[in-house]
Image 1 (cartoon, rainbow, N blue to C red):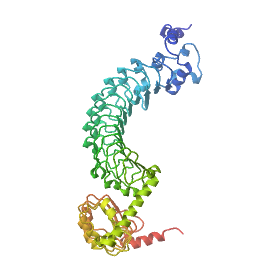
Image 2 (cartoon, rainbow, N blue to C red; image 1 turned 90 degrees about the horizontal axis):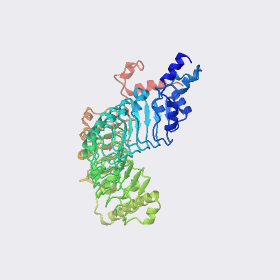
Image 3 (cartoon, rainbow, N blue to C red; image 1 turned 45 degrees about the vertical axis):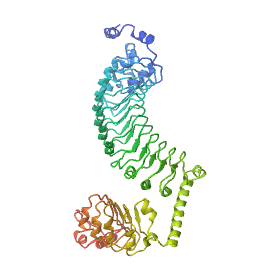
Image 4 (tube, rainbow, N blue to C red; image 1 turned 180 degrees about the vertical axis):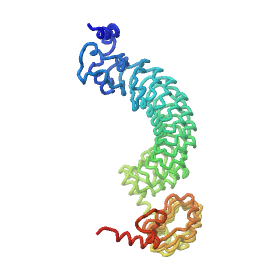
Length: 546
């Protein structure tokens, strides 16, 4: 035996290979060998009660064959091995992890690391886990953890942390250090409170804390301005802080199975798509709860104590699913039948008087068809009443009084009218009109009386008319958000329009305006630009290849 070979054997722990085989569950040598090349080791579902020492030392000790072979092929060069970057120990019977976890240098110093030990019997974590400082994903769910080591909060590179289905009773304040965290799941534990430092997780996109014992949500959570999904279902919440409205990126909010008595008001959550508040104790739903939910597609209110729906629910024009199962609702706004995207309307378990059960049992489409028919019946009945009593204003035959009363919509469109009669505006007396539609007429000017609606109006549609200019009355509508002026004869807008600080959308397509000044064009020449829109358009048409 050469001195070199003797040195190799001297460095070996006596009988280590035999002890390993005797005391540790078998991990196939081929699997270890492959892991040295790939940097990935999957030991899930192997009935392991402990992690073999050979795994922790995979990047420290030479392989056994290195003591036996004198020469190696290119594929057997163990000294060229790849450090372990991904280790999966899920679905075993592990009760603890060794402090030797720190012997996996790649998990400490390299990026894009995964460490998965979910579905085991772990009751604690080693302090050495805090040395995996570049770890990005840690899944320790479905274990028996009662507490977490403070060292865990040193993993400041974490993007995803899964702690669900354990026995945790508290989360330390140190979690606020994980400022790069994007996903956090602490559901199905025994938490009675969560730390206010969670508000420091400004990068968090998904936060799940369902199935705990929370009685309140700290105000600081509102600092999560990037959060898109919040699930606090199955807790003991009696209210939601108004500060929740500051979560401007929120798209999905789950508050099912709590003790809520009213909906939260969410004026800043403009992107909220789904609101789930079923199985609570909500008795009242008002306009203040719905007026800012214009983007909502799913509204789940099942198993509450609602007695009625406000007409403002008809403002949810993007609504696709409305679940009202098991409430105390006796009637519905017939206008639900006209919601353009509504595909699912669930009403089972309500004492509805005006809708027969067989209609409900036919499904959503038949139900919506029935609601639309009732609108027509009401309109017909109103017309008959008008002709009999002659007690109504002339304007009621000109406008949709139902839309005016329920949707705050003044509609006088597609009439080929050159003026808007005063009776139309007379009908708005006392109604907080928010939307005016005067499109598809022959108007050459803006009705001066539109300024009477400036206290409430937010949306004006003047498209498809003959407007050649915009009068200053428009610039008095300080709450205006959307303005449609398409398909007119406009060449300019008044400078005073800049006074409309709330204005977000102006549609000017198919007018006579083409403003190009201030651009460094080589073609067309400045002389052509100076001659106006018609000259520029003629120049462009002449340049089209034939």
